[in-house]
Length: 49
Image 1 (cartoon, rainbow, N blue to C red):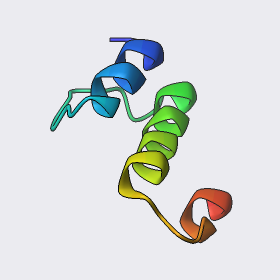
Image 2 (image 1 turned 120 degrees about the horizontal axis):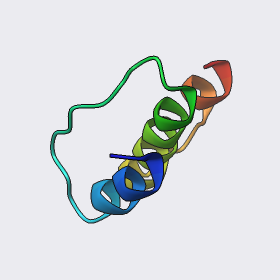
Image 3 (image 1 turned 120 degrees about the vertical axis):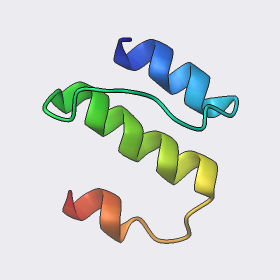
């Protein structure tokens, strides 16, 4: 599963996925989806890595 498919599926309600935690692009996509879908007010966790 690539990061594009993961981003789309997570945006429409994907609850769980088996991903490679060493793939930087996938992990950045996961952080971005979490930020956008959770409606975070502050982006501290995203900016700090």
